[in-house]
Length: 113
Image 1: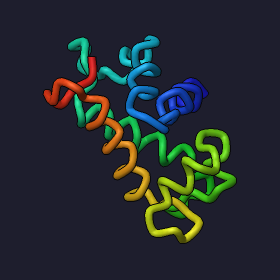
Image 2: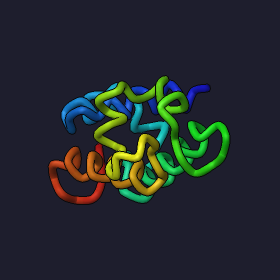
Image 3: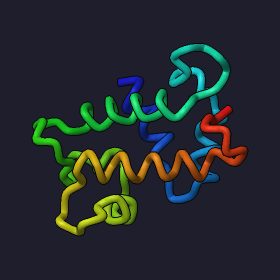
Image 4: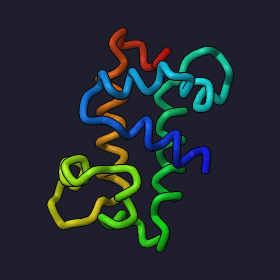
């Protein structure tokens, strides 16, 4: 479950700084599919889409609190559950993690290095 451990580090997204810190700890290399030394928006989104699918154990397109418990604390879950329905849809999940990507991209070049 290498991706679950990696996801846990990346999804410590209470702040962009926490995300950037996680990325600096050797995580970038695992997401950098084209091996250019940076993780671009599409690589990050592809990884997070896959991560969502792995977390969605019952494959209903939603994360329950139980499915997300290993990765998100209660506060993070609530912040990601944009419509407040008690589940996190893939769109909510991706909106959140991609907003965090944008915040971590301090240079504004569309990549994390």
